[in-house]
Amino acid sequence: MNRLCWIYLSFCLIGIVLPYSQILPWSMQNGWNIQQFINDLRANQISLFAWADVSVSAFVFLIFQEIERRRLKMPPSWIPIISLFLVGLSLAFPLFLLLRERHLIVKSEVR
Image (cartoon, rainbow, N blue to C red; front, top):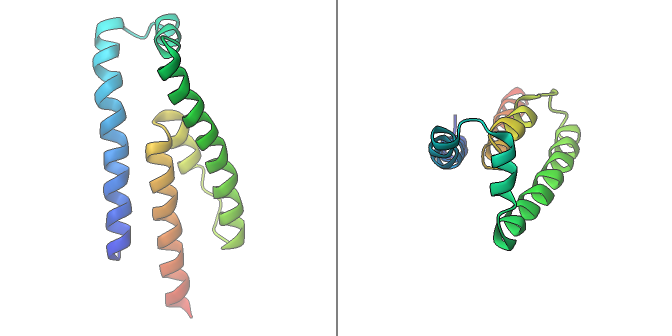
């Protein structure tokens, strides 16, 4: 792995730790109360702003990763998509960039 792969991997770890550092204490306090979760997501205009921003970004990511995967002839991978829904864009995007970079390295070594 090159330096860029290590950077992307570091961002993957940060992308797991930061969101879960917030949701785990919340779930310890509230349990997995879906109604409370939705109420807290819609608590005020700022949380709605953040939710809208992340939703649009996640949608753009899904399109981008599929276009880029096809352009580079990368094999299909559900890992970034699954990570988007299990953790969030903070993991899915750097994970896709890591897989993309590894694909480019292997591709350049074959030549």
